[in-house]
Length: 309
Image (cartoon, rainbow, N blue to C red):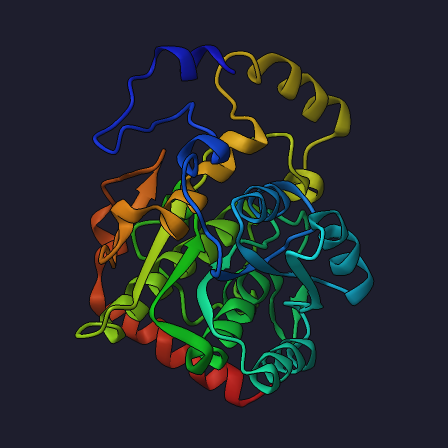
């Protein structure tokens, strides 16, 4: 546990910066629950898979390939189903949706966990900047495709990040979703995380009048996940940063997975929708991240993109 986790007090939920996924789910029986988690093979996704399965939940874990997903789910002793869902491949996403529809599998929650971060040079997926496509469009396709499978009181949890602020004060640049008007790795990552946040809020508005909920979460910073593998920083510097910052302020994987597990299954989150959580508590947002018009423009742009691929 980092020094910062030891000195920072817990929030109103009773949990905080240093809380772990096991602590926020302690005493909960999730028997009979079914939860889908993207990116189940490593980092926060695998920790969430492990902890939720240990509480009796049946988890549908997705990864880029069937082999990788099955390998990640194998230790869960029948409490997890591994499926291929490559968020960079529309056909893979559609195939995953179709399979779950055929199985008529009701989902109590969908956790949009998978993502990539700060690619050093512009790369495109289906003609769009890859971070925006994989982090947002892929999840947009998956969640909207599975709404019929979502339980009447189902929860959608979208892993965003405090990095949404890096998108800038003007919000989503819908005229530069392909990166043709310039590419900066960190800003593009921030835009994808803002898109995650706006998507969660837009979905929450569509759930109004129902028992379904949608929330976004900031997991905190952990250098022990695969997310930073593509960041444009030399490996020796990554190692130095990890060695220096981990004991001071960085979260462990279990601490970083706590907020998404809390939002996904904790009874205190029943009926809570349209919120942004950090350290297992509702957090404040930059005003631009609450812009309903921006979320509507993003939703409409996302629908056009999906219709064209």
